[in-house]
Image 1 (cartoon, rainbow, N blue to C red):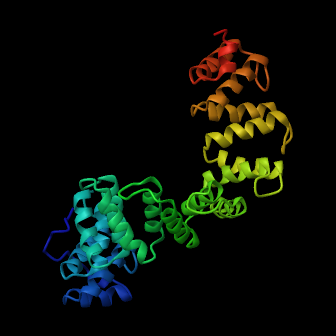
Image 2 (image 1 turned 180 degrees about the vertical axis):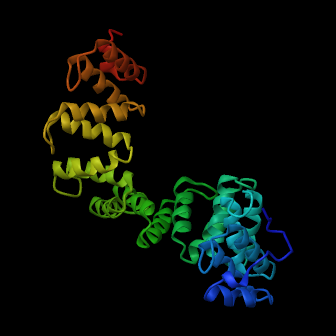
Image 3 (image 1 turned 135 degrees about the vertical axis):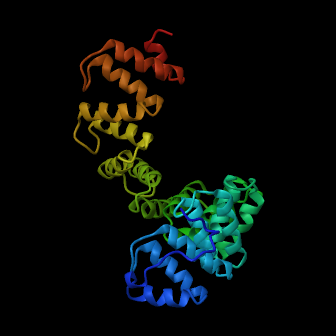
Length: 329
């Protein structure tokens, strides 16, 4: 496998290049940096030739050596994913930094992520905030969301709910589902803004419709308890199920309760047990207790006192008093 530092031109059969790729090649071998970048993209995407990450990296390196910002960013991505080169996070950071210092917003955001996580570089939350801010000011939605998190939790900056709200809103308005969910939470809890449950529901719905499981669960809660919307158990069950199917333990438990009570769904102990078990296996104490009750009484399963004891014990260890009582503790 060729490394990005190879200086020898790769073998390239001109006759196999088609369309724009051939034009880019002819310019690239003459040293045109933009053509080298575009040729790298062609190899990366398999546009006009067979996909070849090693060749893509070779041409990105050629362009980056000449100061091409996008090529430097693409090299960072290649090293991050191990595409065409061995995965190397230190080199990832090196190339992201090259591109970030020349204003590439995607490199700035990714560089911020590396400083936040300490991947390929010493962790430095202050520098993470610095680079997130650079990218966020250029309109990068993911950087705006990450910057919101920094202000929300005081990572690299003093905790500031108003600034967290500001950046979440910026990202949410660009369609970032995680930011939409967090913005909903801020509205519901009054963090950095006056509480407004109707706005909370609005943003939960935006995120939920994009598949955000946390938002789906919260929207289910709003419908179950009539917070910001008319109480609607059918809608509560609908959104709990969406979240539950993505593995959200709280939604799985709540959906199980709805099936036990026949609220918003037809009563079905078998389905209730199925959802309790999914949540219980993730460590949800209430689900463990309810699963114990199901086995104890034969609700939706064959009565099994040993299984009941097992799940009561798990719930009791997490402090569920009813489970402790049922065990005689």
